Length: 192
Image (cartoon, rainbow, N blue to C red; front, side, top):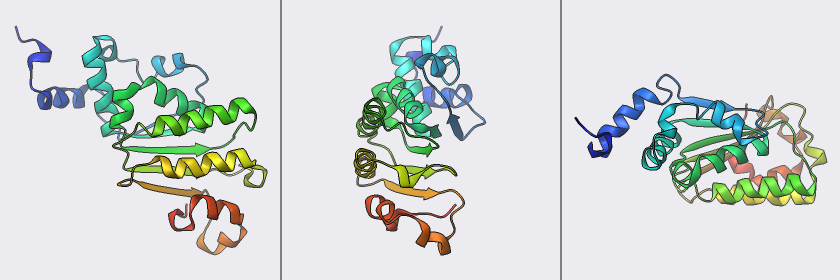
């Protein structure tokens, strides 16, 4: 009988590719308010409950091989926290959609925690921040602007930070508040 952990790592990763969302390149995680939401959806496969080493390898594979979309900071925080240090270290591509942002002290603390957790994502090639229709950019507080500035710098030097506002065309850039362009960098903007 062959013990799974005795197999070479490359072969284990090949096996993970058949087990962990084999037909999905992108994984969206929305409206999480509790870690149980993540465990009952994204991490529901028994592979994550086998043992610590297999869990770490499976999370690392998951985060390296898929593009993640999290809606709002609370969901991103739960995702980043519960994928653990191995998952965060392997995270390659993440998109954060902002539909709402709690400007209370708790909301700012949550968003700063996301930025801190993103600093662990050493393999992060792209961090994409999108503001969806209805997000009130003109209502962003100074503390929130600080978090956005920190987010831009959370990605490694090899990675790319891009941002955009849904439904905005190049000729409409004049309508975007100047502070957004200054804090996030006009050069990092993309049209959607």
